[in-house]
Length: 264
Image 1 (cartoon, rainbow, N blue to C red):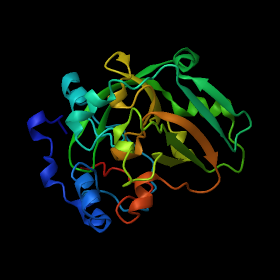
Image 2: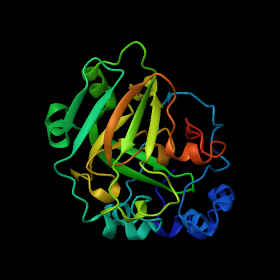
Image 3: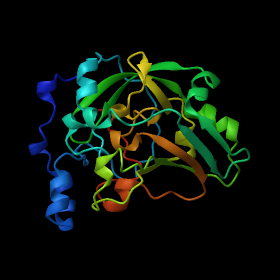
């Protein structure tokens, strides 16, 4: 699937799926719905638990300017073109990620230390939004599995829960009452240990900028984009499937797994 030019990105006015469930939240929520992501007809069933089994063919990179200018990031705005400017003032250093829960070695990591503690790799991955558009990004980061090896999950751990930053002073999208922050996501432990699941710290040979989820975010390319949580501040190993941000609002629309159909 070639990377679409900006002109082919799905217009927000044509995105209907999420509006259906947000209609019940009232007029304010309906306004938020315009820029959101919802499952497409090609999305797998919510219970699809399969891990990726093949590597997709090489893709043409999305131009960096396009990737910088079009960002789906509700903490800042539902207007994708406004996110870059709104995110510019977010302080991303120093930044600490706490890792705990059902682990033998709970730890707190400064992101700048993670850059040297774990070998950084480039991963060119197509990220798909359930609205129908996608981007091919050259990420820099390291396998999440390496971090999990250090903290040593206990035998009771079955899932990984991720939590993002709450900072309404610098994240204007968090000032309203439509959503309950923080943004949270989760993976099954075996998914988190898969080599394709990475913690990204950069893109396009640069440190990860705030509008793309910097300074550290999850990248799970076999799942729809809302699973790749941005601005991570905490990671916990837990026994039960965790509640996640969009799944809590509409479990029938946003399955916990939300795997991409590899044939689409």
